Image (cartoon, rainbow, N blue to C red; front, side, top):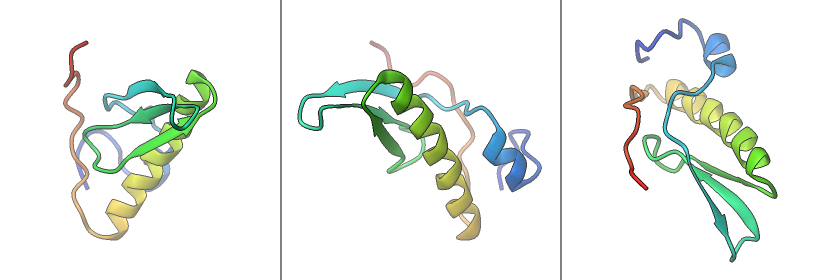
Length: 84
């Protein structure tokens, strides 16, 4: 597991994510989409901006839990990756 200050899966699940989250409106989905570029495949949606953020926090925790179960590395948060 990575060394970014999380000592157990319980702490991991309750930690505030420090990964960049990109949020945009999707006309096709009629929802806000929240993507986490540093965690491949990690994305969520919601009918509001706030719901998309709340949902992606859950998905980040689940992504990390699955990576741990599979013995895969959890990337260190790198901070700002994209520029508007």
